[in-house]
Figure: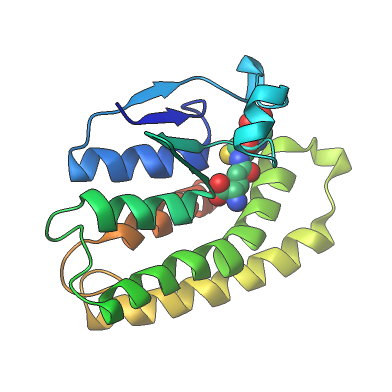
Length: 178
Ligand SMILES: N[C@@H](CCC(=O)N[C@@H](CS)C(=O)NCC(=O)O)C(=O)O
C-alpha cells in the first residue's frame, strides 16, 4: 500500500491527503515530523534529505515536495476530473500550484507568523503592512481569474484548487486585522 510519511497537522501533508481523498486512493499515513519527530533520523533522511514532510513511498518509488507529489498522484492514479486532460491542462494546473507556493504563501506566512504567533508587543508592523499589500495583490490576481471560470485550471475542480484554498483560508483567518 502507498505510504505517506507526515503528521496530519502539516499543511503540506494535508494537501497530499486532500488529493488522495479526491482521487479515492487508499493509503497508509504515518505520523512523522513536528512533535512526532523522526524526520531527522538517518533512515528518514535517506528517503528525503530535506528532513521535511511529506514523503511519499509508492512501492520502490520514493518522492518528496508536496506539489510534485500531488502532480504525480493525479497523473498516475487520478480519474476525470482529477487527471489532467492534456499537457496544457496539466501545465496550467501546475502553474497555479507553483504560483501559490511562490507568490501566495510568502506574504500569508508572514501575516500568520506575525499576527498569530508573535506577541503584540514584539510584532513588526512594517513587515505586516508589506505582506498585507502583497497578499491583497496576489489574491486580486486569483479573484480576477476566478471571475472568468469556476476553478483555476478550468470549469472543473482539478489538482490545483485545493492548493490555493489552504493559504486563502489562512488569509481569511487574519482578515479582522485592517
Ligand atoms: N516544499 C516542501 C515543504 C515541506 C515543509 O516545509 N514541511 C514542513 C511541515 S508543513 C516540515 O517538514 N516541517 C518540519 C517538521 O514537521 O518537523 C513541500 O512542499 O513538501
